[in-house]
Length: 187
Image (cartoon, rainbow, N blue to C red; front, side, top):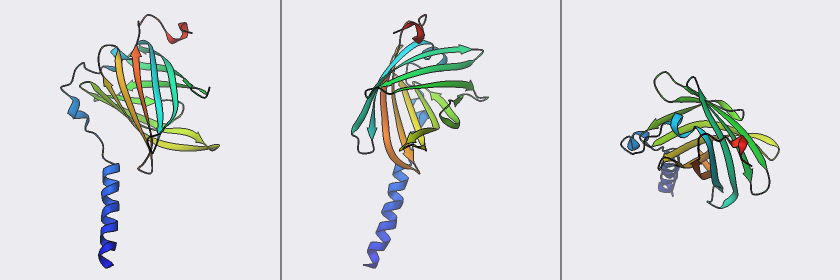
C-alpha cells in the first residue's frame, strides 16, 4: 500500500510535466516559406475553423474575415468572427515590433501583452484571453501556433489552458486574398 503513494505523486508530476511541455520554435528555422508577419498579414484574409473541448469534441465552427494593415512597422488586424450558432465576435490585434525581434501583441480581450516570435515558417503567440463563461470573466492561457504553408495559406492551432490544464483547442486555416481588397469591402 505504501508503494502506491509513491507512484501517485510521480504520475501526477509526469502528467503536469507533459501537459506543460511546449514546442520549440527553433525546430522550424529551416522551413519555408518564411513566416514574415508583415507580408502574410497584409490586406484581406479569411479564416475557417473549429473549437474543440478538452475531450476533442468539436463544439463550435466559425468563419472570420481579417482586415490587416501595417503603418510605420505596427500591424493592425481587425477580425470579425461568425460562429455556427449566430454569435458574432470582433477583435482588433495590434502587433508592435520588439527590440530584439518578434512582436508585442495586444487586443481588447487580451489580458496584458502577448508575445509573438517567428522562426522559419512558424509563428508562436502566447497570451491570456479573457472570455465570458457562465456570465463571469474567465482568463485562459493561449499557446497559438501558426504554420505558413505557402504564399496564401497559414494553418493555425491554439491550445487553451487554465492553471496548466488543457481545456480546449482551436484549429483553423487562414487564407490571404488579393491584398488590395479589405474585409470591409467584402459582404
